[in-house]
Image (tube, rainbow, N blue to C red):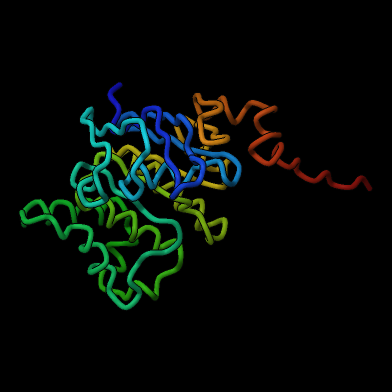
Length: 249
């Protein structure tokens, strides 16, 4: 299956410090979710900075749709089909949901395509349609994250990069957000996901990659990684808690 984005043997870091990524490679096939999990400092967020053009790699290659885009900045990477949803909340609270979403389409000059993409994201994210004219700052954290997802899809990207989408959300909102990630994938968008909630991310993803010391330590079908007890102990916070046993009377 063709990859929408591929990082090949990438080394990258900050300033004169030792590299954070040390021969990192990953491929995100069309119509799939690939998640990156691993301990703090493993390089997960650095991968997204490189993939989005925010950080130029020291060596290695970045391919989008098979085209070499290594070294392009964020605007050109977006034009190439790579959209980034940042960690935390990035909505403009004093603007409406509509204004926030349409900011993602500022490069679209074709009005018919703009209308089509607007209809698409409204259908994909019902809360966006329902709260279209509301101030974004009045929405819950989970609803704001869906606005960010919708904004990222306005340019019909090949791949969306998601950096810790569940950060700061309660369990119910987290569940909704991961359901929406699946909807994005099912609608045809490839997703590269970085997430601290490793178990929930692997439950959502098709493929999982465990990062350690700046490179992929283990990769494979996400369900297999979840079922690996050794991996669970090392990287996923141990085994899931057993349900409490009711006392005998």
